[in-house]
Amino acid sequence: MFHLIELLYEDKADYNSVIEIFKDSESDDYTTNAQVILSKYLNALEVFGMKVVKRKNKFKLENSLYLMPFSYEDLKSINILISSVKDFPESDVTQNIKEFLRTLSLRMNDDDKNILSNFEQSYDFSLFSSNLKDQIKYCENICKENFLIEVIYQKNKKEIKIKCNPKEVIYDTKNAYLSVYDVTKRENADIAISNILSITKQPQIANPTELTTTVVYKLKHRLAKTYKVKENEYSRGYDEDGNLIIVNKNEPFDKLMKRLMRYTFSCEIISPKPLRDMMVGLINETLENYK
Amino acid sequence: MKEFRKTKQVTYNLMSFTGFKSVLIFSCLLEGAKTYEDIQKCIYENEFLHETISVDAIRVYLNSLRSLGCNIIRTTSDGVPRFHIDSHPFELKITEAQTKSIIKVFKAIYKSLDISDLLTLQSFLENFSKYITNTDLKNKFKNISPLNNIDPDIIKDLINYGKDNTEIIMYYNSAGSGKKNINIIVDKMNVINGKLYVYGVNSEYNNYSSFLVSRIIKIIGVNMQKSELNMPEMTIGYEFNINGNETFIPLKNEKIISKTPTSYVVEMTSKNKFDLIQRVMSHANSCKVLYPENFKQDVIDCLKRMKEGYFEKK
Picture: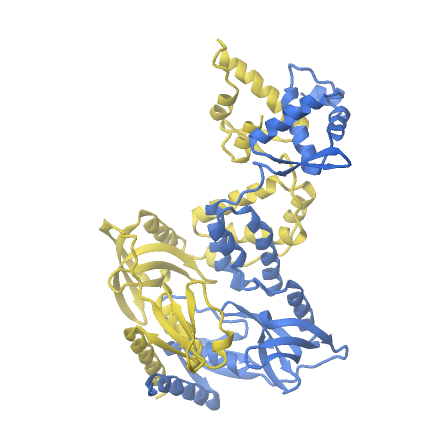
């Protein structure tokens, strides 16, 4: 009985798997017997109050053996998740979240289901209905195939060509990026998918080893005391002048430089030297705008 | 089936009674601790069963549930044993793939949500993280929100105080000067660079400031008199050079004034000069401040000071 329920919960209750549970190999007519036993168990579940339906040769559970309490906040969050996957361009992500929502719905009482279907607030996650869908899908497949690729993209009115390992597609509110590891420069980069001109697959499989450059920078003044270390960072503590030393790994350089620019003169890159020079170059180029 | 639903009479050739009793006992023990007598009553009072069951038979059912993976806890009070199910195999499980997908979607959408929605999601993430078995992913899931580790009651209070610009006294752990009381007239809250800030007029110094909400220890006083935010707003204009086809995302306090195929002219308004400088600096060489002149000069001075920092004698 509980084996059947387990298959139903996991949404793996296709007819063949289910009938296998009830087969008795010693009986001559074991398939017919199994069918009889199965229908007796399904009847037991129905009498108990569990609704099981058969669709396309598969048994589906429509409500749970037990119910979970959901607060109004939980239901509101579920509503946000439902809105977010409506137009999300990655099918795998959408599928995973829909499956999660199904498992929640199974455990929800009718009142909660009713509240959920009557939420009036809608959310505009407009990136996900953008015209980038096909390119995103292509990048998503490129990441799955995991071959070394050559990408040509636009950056500040120039065409850039890099050889890289594709990693994943990531998003902010309006843009989608292909996150890659540049094998020549040994750095991570997030390339705006809208700026990609071409992607050419190379014959080699992407090497999983990433030797990224570690960046060390110091934070001065008040920021040294208030800074919250990021996910990809750790602190080496304070130097003799009271500056906080931060070690950063894997953050794409472009992204990191723009973030550090926000900290203005309260931040200084210590190493590697090429990145320190790049930062000075970026400050100079910004100053050039005012000449 | 339909017929016996009406008559409540079930025969052995229609339904598995063993299966039915096992789910009934499972459900009974999920409700809370039950004695043998409670379980017997539950079976007896069921409209389809009306049968008595021995303690030995109940033990067999309990052992079957245990072998299935149910963690049945036995407690004794007044010499009477009680049983309840502490965990079972049908509990909600959030798989690794589902967890990663929720994290990915959260990262993509959280900047579009207002603080009260973020607060709602934060509580959801915390409540549901217990259904993730992988410890690393569980921590990522729990800590992904910028509101993580901040007292939700303080956030709720600040949302309300911001609605009518209430003046409050907060006990604040300042990075520079330690713990102290600060008076502010609350304006709004914003997430900047993954951190939650409250903005308002510091009534003691009469300047518009921002404070990290995570550093507020508690709100110790509220001025019941109506307060007003009398700080002047500063408006700046800047030119932003578009990088290829990348979409420029204006902040709530920004407005695109004009567009060319290669650039935008953006106007930004804030009571806080520091915010304006940070925004402009984050655009680096893609941005040039157009007006006002004194703000433009401040940005140039800031850039020069940054440069000097790199050439100072060590």
